[in-house]
Image 1 (cartoon, helix red, strand yellow):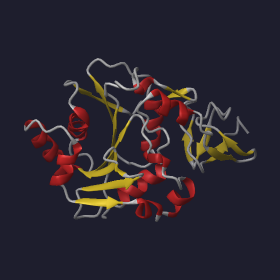
Image 2 (cartoon, helix red, strand yellow; image 1 turned 120 degrees about the vertical axis):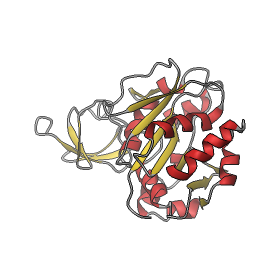
Image 3 (spheres, helix red, strand yellow; image 1 turned 180 degrees about the horizontal axis):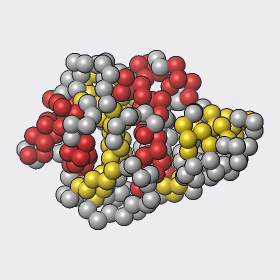
Image 4 (cartoon, helix red, strand yellow; image 1 turned 90 degrees about the vertical axis):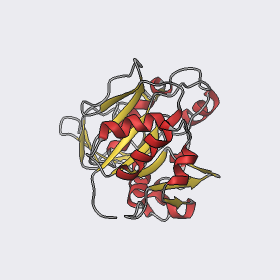
Length: 261
């Protein structure tokens, strides 16, 4: 795959019928699911991160550079949200990673691997694990996929299966996903692909141990955010971070700032 600007779409406007309350605002160890999603995908892309919400939907504070798009039509499934996200990105990215807001165990290394797996003659790099395809953890070629989505919506076809039938899809099964050494080491069970659809799934995921991260000078701790790590300012894998809600992922190396050391 040739070098290209990579962007991300976070779908936050679903009706959350089974969850019973808006998923985007659900707590995740002192943060929210939407804040975590934005922070995780931003590590793996070099272009815009667009959060697609329903018209008038409330969102918590997000990083300043996050872009918001509105999906004015309700109950039309993920394709409608994807269309809004692709329209907002326009021609600013060649490759777009799409995720739902309900995947807090998503790991940046898996995102990077899925994006890197999209070859020049592919439209979609589609993970297929745990017995299912995962179109909301996939990488899409914007120039070819966005028009297909628009055409499907115009026909009244709202599912992702019809989209895949019209695309050149690179299927990434579990061995293909785990072929990346970082993914195999940091997400061997491919929990990145877990979606939280109801209160029981949310409770079970929330009860899992928080990510194991290495804090230079302090050793290994378990924390999902800087605040949970008790850190104000730091470098996370060499990148500056000061937002208390900045997400941490398994394997992160956190270097304390001078004032924190």
